[in-house]
Length: 623
Image (cartoon, rainbow, N blue to C red):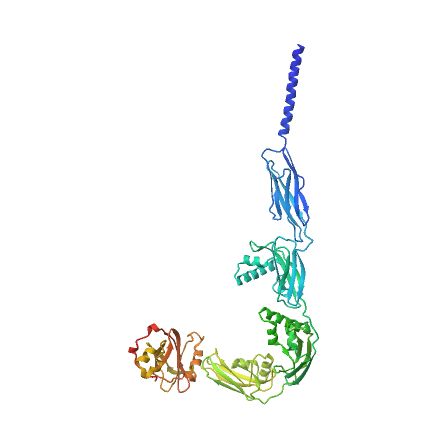
């Protein structure tokens, strides 16, 4: 009895013991699965480098995996290949700005999503470091070290004034402007943008990056930005800039003596340098004009030298050699200069400096002398004005001074505009002199006017000059262009039917055309004339100028109504012209009262294939 009870108890004990172990195993197997990141925020230095974040998994599930991804391009080599660890590399931050990225993490056995936030410090180093190797007046050479040694970069320069004038102060604006300029340069040399970028860009440390043909003593912005050579797009739209001022040209003392003789509005300047072989530049400015142009705060000594040096650089950029610039603009040895284009009773500054014969730049301190012109000398010179060939829209005007060496200003205005200038000629003369924008000549002058208004009165005028100031009264002459009431009665007409090969005609009619036997490439055309009276003067010309050469018939009338074109034929006129050319036939008749009739103008074509046989030709004389 006791033995059986013990067995049952023993069996029950075994059953109960087994049952307890099974429940404990089920609890472990069916417990919650968890995923835990050791870090969710990481701070990284600007240098970047390899990073890792550990994780733990409780109750891992078969087939479940860890997945990670990041959209930020500066997070690289992201991997979960090592169990219990997420590894990645943070790229260096070459900018001064901090930046943030987020790595998304997922363990597929749980629903919860995880993130690792990465904050990278900004760099305390510049994107680029410049070492100026050469700084000369027109030449810079730099060694450039980028913080990012692997990405290509553009390095170029503009003057600081250019950057400000074109509003290129923002990085985006400068890059867009520069890439447009680079694309134009590439097209100019016949390359694609990407090929051209390959040729001009640098990678890693750049040695002896040169900029030539620069302006002396000028602030230049030397800028760099990274570029993707595969796409031609900027890498990060960030620009590094430094302002570098080019060197001043070296100068030496210039030993020179200047003397001035003032007579009315004319100043005679004599220049006597101690060294007769030194080249120098000498010029002058109206003092008021100088300050109005450059500003009242400008320093004349600096401005005049700077502008000269800039002009030398610009001419060199255009392909001129320094010696050519010197030959065209500079002097050497003793000189006498007559300044006869000055205004009376006006302050002027005369300046001079030596130039370097190798570079053309100013090579001495500038010497400035102030002088004032006197009152203009009155002159008894007269100016005769003659107007010829007056038509509807054209006229020829001639001015002749009584003194062959006398200078004068001249112009032509509509009478209404001339009278609107002022009430009297003296007042008009004062206004004309202050504007000083008329053509100047010496002795004689003429002009062929065109595009005038028909039936309109004009005034041709002139006045004598002492320097640039009037020294005579105002001389003037009125004339009126032709109107509808001046049209003559003759309506000339020109016609033609056939043309013949001139060489063939010469063989067939040697009596009249024998001297033209070699003119195989010429046509003989008989022009039939009608509509002109026997008392008219007939003007006729045949020209290769196209019929639309002039914008109005008035200009054709002016050209045809010349003495050289007077043929005075009323029935026939023989014309000889080359084959395969287009001609314009122009004619007009002038009646006994001097009035011109209707202008004839028409095109004529002479093609050899259209020639008629010489056997059909009948001689017609000009009549």
